[in-house]
Each structure stands twice: as structure tokens, then as C-alpha cells.
Length: 317
Image 1 (spheres, rainbow, N blue to C red):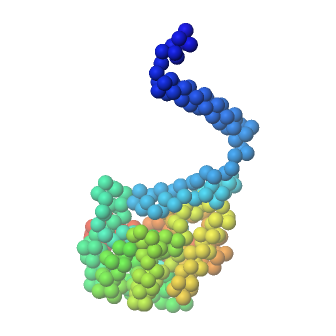
Image 2: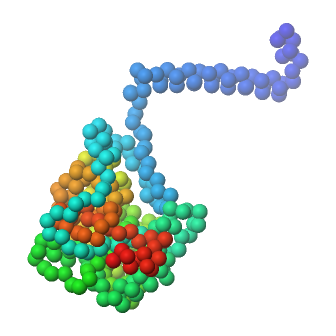
Image 3: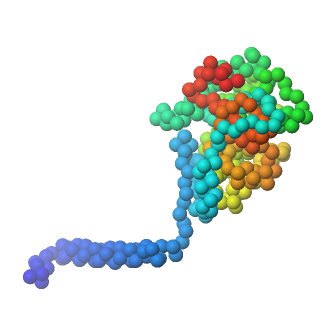
């Protein structure tokens, strides 16, 4: 019957049917091979090419994949990283009231659908009004190089001290924030993830050096690639911390002593890695206006975002 069927087929039709059956046989063989390969006794022998990706909707370039080999495999360290996120700490030792304000984007949100960025974006007009308020009311903008010795009791701070910080090194800091800071002669600190500079909408090293020469802007470390540090192996953690410090010092020719935790996350292992690298302090994201000797490696900051009006801004001071 099949023989009669094939005899009545045209040459083209017979070829198509033959190709179909050959493809079907190959597919069955391939599926059988994969099933055998992925059985429990074989799966552990496969090459480890998996990627761990951290994606931030407001910043696609932060989604740089992390090779699975740098993810911390130690069970206890992994458990610790899940519970040791920053929580309000009790100030200890010498205490000083110095609000540290935390900004991200200074510019209008180019993507209205990105609601997360709305909360991180301060328009240039709002930022200008905030800086005018600081100048008109005689606030003294200082840096961490001034705060640290004050906490040690070796210097006195000027009246109404405050620190302005800007995370992530976006280029809108150069175009939108820097001219306003110059206008009111206000100091600021920019935390830089060094491996992202000269890319996309990040600062260039030439822009960074130009702002440094003004004497108003200082630059501190924010890791190399903005990974969540608590998830990294000891080797990768050291590379992110030491690498950022060394690159900044080489580019700018000044000591880099302070660090901001990406995403505000840290644990005892991360703090120890900072100390081993020679850092003397770090900032996090929990809210308080009080700085102390005991919280020098997780200094609190007050976030200023897109929903912060001027009265709310004043309440942060």
C-alpha cells in the first residue's frame, strides 16, 4: 500500500516527505541524547557557564552579567548576606548632627513608564531651588574628609554642616547639577562605579577631572561594576573594592578613603574587605541625621528624590 502511495507521488512531493521524516528522526535522537546528558548522575559534569544577572530597570547598563564563579558558594555567607542588610544602627562614641543627602539622577525622566526612575530623578529646577535654599540659609557643605576628623575630635565643623552625595556617576551630574553647584559655590561628593565610566550616559574621566579641578567636587568609590557586594565570592569582592579605589586614585591623583555600598547592602564580610583595602568609612542608605564613630562604616543618608518637594527637603536638614 505504501509502495503504491509513493509511486503516485510527484518527485517534489516525495522529496519533501523524505526530508520531513529524516528531520523527525534526527529530532528524536537529539532529544534522547539531551535527556541522557541531563540525568542527575551527569548534570554535575557539565561546564559551569551559568550567569547571574542583576537588572535595574532605571539603569540597563547595571545589568552586566556576573559569572557564576564569582557568586559566593559558602552557605553560611549566603545566609548572612540575606539577613545583614542595613538596618538603623545605634550611634556610638562621638556623635555629630550632619545630614548626608543622597541624590541619583538630576534630570527629567526620559521614560515616563519607568516609575522607579521617577522616585530617583530630581528635575534641574527643583535641584536649583534646593541648592538656593542651602545657600540662602548659610548651610556649610563639607566632605567626608572633613567629617571624619571631626568625629575623631581633632577639628571643629563649620555652622550648619551638611554633605551632598550623588551616586552612580551619571553624566547628568556634569550637565545639570555641576553648574548649579558652581553657581552657589557648594561642595559635593560623587560616588563612582569606575568600570562604568566612559559608557553610555555615564560620566567620562575628562568630565570627572574637570569637576575635580573646580575644588568643589570630590570623588569616592562605589565599586567597579555596581554589583551587590554581599553576593560575591571573597575574590570578586576584593576585586570590586580594591579595583575601584586603585582606579580612582590613579585617575585623580588623590587618596580615596570612602565608599558607598551599591544598593545600600553590606554585611560584616564586606566591611572587613573595605577595612583591609584601606578605606576608613562608608555610607549606606538607612535614614538618620546623626553621624557617629560607631557607624562610620555604615553612615546613614537621607534620600532626595523626585517626590521630594521643598518643604520635605527642608525637613531632611
